[in-house]
Length: 240
Image (cartoon, rainbow, N blue to C red; front, side, top):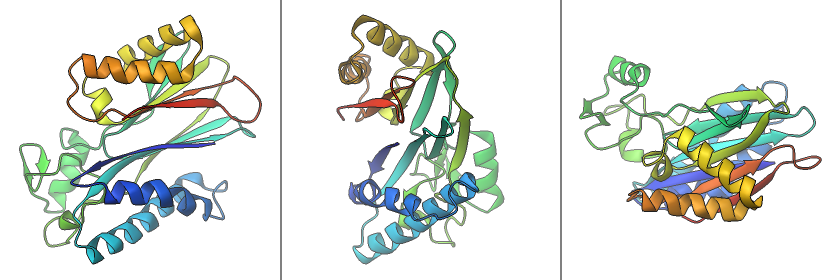
């Protein structure tokens, strides 16, 4: 099973490209199950190369974050790959929130050091004074080697062998996480599912809660319930 959220900025062209094309790039990696991390990294790089070529041809400066969740029912493993500041969190062992991603922002010391070591300009925790993330798809104006040689779509990849105590995964864009903590989100979803077991209703309620708490960004959410049937998890997406 494949689930993904793409959060675009400065236009929707890059996010739309990823929505239609990234899955295909992942599927074309013949050695995927031999070395999943390398395969995902290659797929992200090739997708970004294609996206940037199209964006340059169209004189389009848009970019996008990405967070992808892949569930392998045969091995009962969950793979999460991300680029940017969209997140995934796993509810484990009675509702404890386990982060599966770490934001690629310039408030993160290792990302700040990486950018500065390559000569990138950082102003007010933003790349070249404007870009809030340190990794992204597209953003061709920031990928000229003369201005920022280290802006990349290289993903960080987490692989987890699931067990019976793993309950659900929440995938969301920064409009959710800037307003609600990961533990708050996990508690909210767990309470919703205990009341009615309706994933779509829970996803919708979570987006509404983020907006009620003051989110001024778009809010997109996917909830993936684990261990609810053979082969693949059940999932639902909340409105943007």
